[in-house]
Length: 223
Length: 314
Image (tube, rainbow over the protein chains, first blue to last red):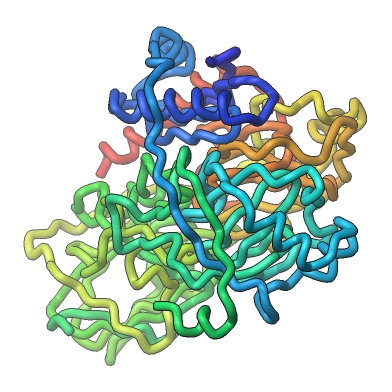
């Protein structure tokens, strides 16, 4: 539940659900997000759910912070509401030249490539949020022994389709972009499609992702 | 190809189609985009007697050189911009906030913005542009919006789908003022920074870096020391947020910003100062001043009234 609402500048509400990152807290964030989307409050410009925060930006020409805060505080959510739970399979190739940071991962995690792959593929990942760049999913959680910091110097260009890991999360670079996550492989699958205006993102908060390993040959034959 | 069009002889540095932007998409990772300087964007459309959400050409620093092919049309340019209108028989220096008529084979040569960044060109008519999520605004990072999500290229054609025939010559007197003190509200991670860092943030000068673009303004100045953690759990961002990464150099989020970020937020620029902030060219020196929420709200109301007064004069 929302623990505290404060202002982020003069045109946004910062709704804090706590410090921890877990599915329970994140489910509440998503439920509030869903509820606010249903209500279609005219003065709201954007609602951004993340692990444990919800940021609501509004049109300062139409409403002020305190009035919108009062309105949001009155909103009740159905705690028992179940979230949409799609299960999606994402194929990844972890061979050269797609696995850009395998040497680094072996060194930092003190695990062999085989062990890293076994740990990585043998899991279901929960989508906590999407964003940063269009359609990028933030997926968790990686096992304790798979957690590693961001690159000391971020790449200027991470190739499109790259799967990165850092700390307890994995993500997918939907576009070529700057970024500092450790790149384990690459997917040929289209994760963001801007020709589909109603549903451009393949993976949405609340969904479950299963990664499957494919060879370089399967990657190049992928349609 | 329609019968009325521009040929882009020189594309300029970053020329794109923009309108008021797209909302309710942050949760998908799609930013607001839209014209950077909202006031000058609105003035451009009002001067051209357009709907206020009509697509315009936004350019940065050096603008495009456009050759016009078609029936008589009128245009205006807003901002602080040097431009020429060239025909077979004459060449004149144009004034911003005034409408001009051009004919077949005339050229508009937008030389540069003066001590500012963005300028706007609006037509008495409509560019033939594609819309995505209700907006034509081009986001070149995600290839969303008009012109296949790309900035203008040399040699390309810009089609015009409609020309307004009934038109009165228009002009206003307006001079863009330069801002030196950017007013900010304390950010949600204010306490991540040392006393010295806070003191430096509000007392020392910062320089706008060359690496600034439609995504963000990067600043150079005293490095802001973080005493807590240089990362936060990633969370939503909005326009105007000032993030401070581990290197201690602040970055202000602008219209094409990433929707999620993991660096501590030291402050947020107030809405009333946004249009003038984006117009600060690289190399400009600025200072920050802390104000509270109710003052920020009053300042925005005043800024809005000023914009409305200008629009009503047209």
